[in-house]
Length: 381
Image (cartoon, rainbow, N blue to C red; front, top):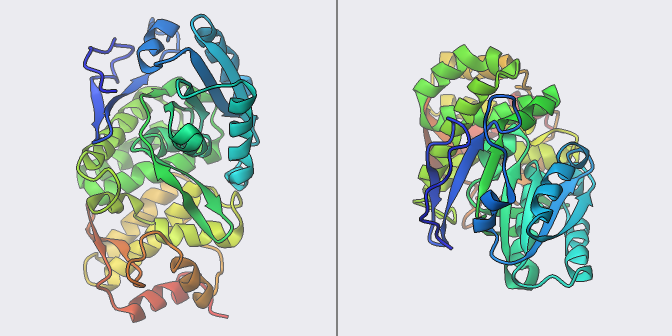
């Protein structure tokens, strides 16, 4: 479904941002609807163009549901047959058991190919809901309503869906684009500080890989973002969504340039897998991983020591870790071997040619990689 009708203005953050893919085009709406600023409320009539049938399943988790589910359920129930599925909260529950819970509700309500799934939550809920939508009856529609900063700026946009496997993160999934991404800045007001910082890791990532001027803007505005200034956060979300939309339009299924969005992730996934899903938040692991990637970039002669120090400073300003936990080099290399970016048995990494310019490469000296793994808190056994 490609929508050509104009979208109502819910807040000045929303200025017609669309993601265009081979599958279909869809809007990203960034609003502050829950704040007392005169912004109109979301209604069933607003959401109706994105829901082709009469059946809706809202998927949320035990943390988010008590905050926002009742309102959304009430809105949708005025026009649709609505069911809910409440999952346990945490990366450790991003697995097949949780997917089966979603399937069970769909089957119990006799929902069919006209059902639309609505993901109400953070990245874990969004990824699992999207994968359930991609696989139920070989594919049904879904809508993303991300409630965390990390999901608003990254995981809700672009159609990556999936679950974890004990041997690797996000190894089982599908590319499945949503019909709509609706990001309400007001949901960030209930976000725990640690979760906010984890989201800021992905915001900083965009600056490091795409826009050095945005990095300068972040250095000046991170204190306001940490203080939950929703105006500043809204501007950051808008910028990040535009960056990602620009990349996805050229590479929907990550066969080329889209891989740069995984800057810091190959190192970070090692941390998440080794430490146990949920022990380190995704953004925390990515933050430490970005420092490691920056250090390898410096050893290759692309970044200066001051550049690396700047990366560390901006992450520290966001209350993010810059040192990973102790993991043996052999273990780290083995876990990297399971990464989705491995090609023909060769690890591919996203590194920085300069601050604001990333490159996907497997042309690096393995000895330099070993040095980074050894010296930067990966302790050889």
